[in-house]
Amino acid sequence: MREETIRLIRQHKVISIVRNLPFESLAPFANAVLHGGVRLVEVTFMQDDPRSWERTCESIRLLNGMGICAGAGTVLTERQLTLAHDAGARYIISPNTDEKVIRRTRELGLVSIPGAFTPTEISGAYQFGADFVKLFPVSALGPAYIKAIRAPLCHIPLIAVGGISSANMHEYIAAGCAAVGVGGNLANLSLIRSGAFDRIEQLARSYADAESPPHP
Image: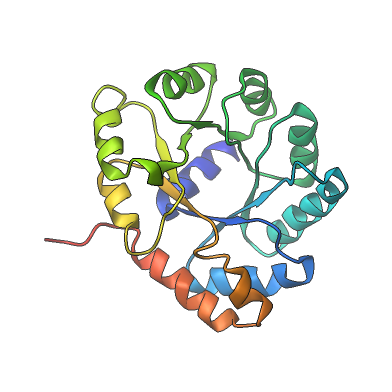
């Protein structure tokens, strides 16, 4: 299952990040992004509200039942990791590099995607066992930073997160990223609350269509 998840991430390249989404809107949102061609959805843990963690796990279970490759995001502790694993999360994404979380993720047979920013953090995360390293917030430096990092660290698969749009996604893929994470530009709360899931589907399709850089 772990190798299959890695293959799906490399193949589909877009992870939709869901944060603060009303539970009743999750299924129609998932249907919309699926129809638009996005197959991976990350549901984040809200650190300031432990009471919401069970709902995060319910969301992961629901997504898995709909054919989504679901993962857990903002995983900062081994407790959250255990909850995500028990809910069926296939990959674990964090904003930081925590050796214990990375190693435990691998022990549980899940795909590890910790967050990092500097060359030291990126190489450290990979040495601890990360399958991919999430560059966050990548919008602070842009695709040029990816190209510079990839020169000495071309063996480390990177996922760009932060400010990714369908218009600039191909620039990050062309710079060497294996995939991207997309937050509110796709899981747009205003559109979701208004029930504009047809628009969400169109947005998802624009990302799916941008998976490969345009031909010159």
